[in-house]
Amino acid sequence: MVGIRTFLRRTWGRVWIYSFFALLLMIALSFIQHVIGGINWEAFQYPAEDGKPNVFVDDINHPSELTSLLVGDNYLYLFYGRIDVVKVYDLDGQYLYSVNFRDGRDSGGPSYIYVFGNHMVYLPRSTHTAYIFEDDVLTAQESVEYRDVFPKTLFPGVSSYNRQVDSAGNRYQFRLANIVRVAPDGQATTLIRRSPLYCIFGHFSFYWICTLLFFLMLIVPAVIVDMKEKKKQKQPSEAP
Image 1 (cartoon, helix red, strand yellow):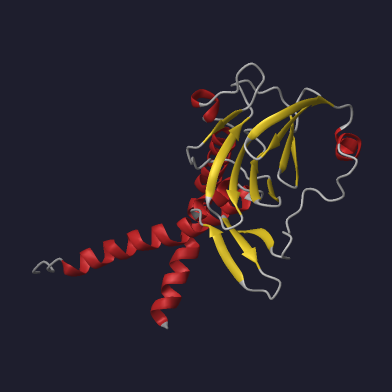
Image 2 (cartoon, helix red, strand yellow):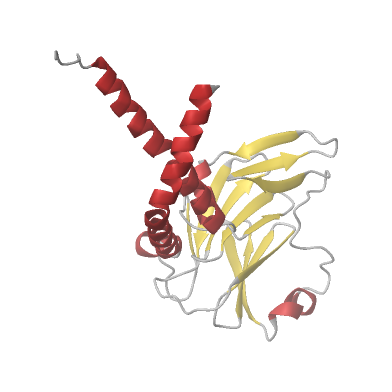
């Protein structure tokens, strides 16, 4: 018990000592995270050409924020809104393909996707053109005036879209960085496993960075001091 108290006292003392450096490191990490999370690497390898999105099958993990998780009749759509990439899976979490909507230029402003049936509709950042996919095929490009009324005006027969629940009543949701399916009886199944480090690029990235630095401040200095003390204890004492 005494050892634990000594460990905590030394640790908290070092938290204050290293707090300023931790603040600088936190600001630097937040800036790096923001820059990396906004880079569309697929724009270099699989760029959109002539205004048409590029469909590819390479399964690439994106260090960027997942802004939407939407469910169609047969597909699960993961939308990376900052980089304009959609990854498509079946309802059991098997990867199928990805769609890149960016050609390397960032025109600014938010972009959106709508999902209904086996259709996915992408609304780009600056234009009023809707890209309509059925399965993995671009079937149409339509002009729209207002994004908020788009589903009703362009597809008046669609009564349900942008769902997170499938026809069997299963709910799909985020748990940390993983994608989980929750059955109506509450049983959860992890469909897509991702490293917890992807939380750094999520909605609460700032808090995850703060938590990571806090634990580093607790553990690293204490471990270093403990190693030094053990090294001193092993050294033979000098004769008087």
